[in-house]
Image 1 (cartoon, rainbow, N blue to C red):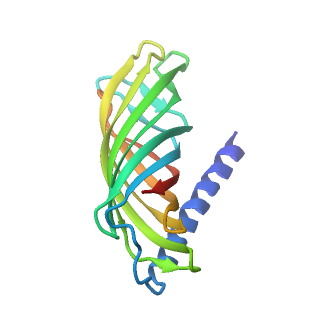
Image 2: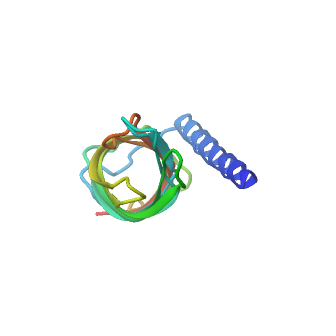
Length: 211
């Protein structure tokens, strides 16, 4: 089990370092003349891997944990300028929740998950790879809500919580209308009755079209 965990940790580090390298390389490249995004609407599909986290519960010796899980959703955005984009997305899925209490076995349950984010993204610079393909490093930040519905053991997790996120990555455009984004994001969720915020890291992939 420890070997699997170590391999998963190494993979996450490779992905994060790879995206950071792509971010730095594209940021240092020669700029394109005109990105052509300003005033365009975007529609996209998104998939995001969320690494789980755990936190002790207040006024209790119990620990609440969320396992790793893949989520999917859809979103829409608007390019205010060639550089600045605002977008919103909804994602759904499920997550395994476990509660470890003193002198008892670990209790597990599955929770439906529903999330909503509003983000601002900044395309730092555009690099023309070919006449129809461009690449841009991206930084993103946002706020949102996440809802859970589970009851592992005697601990009930049925709530909607505030989240905020930060991330960086790269955006590739094909023919000025189709785009793919790869982002490594950290999302913090402030659950009720927990001592610390849960931090859900992971890779996000988006495929979309501009109109």
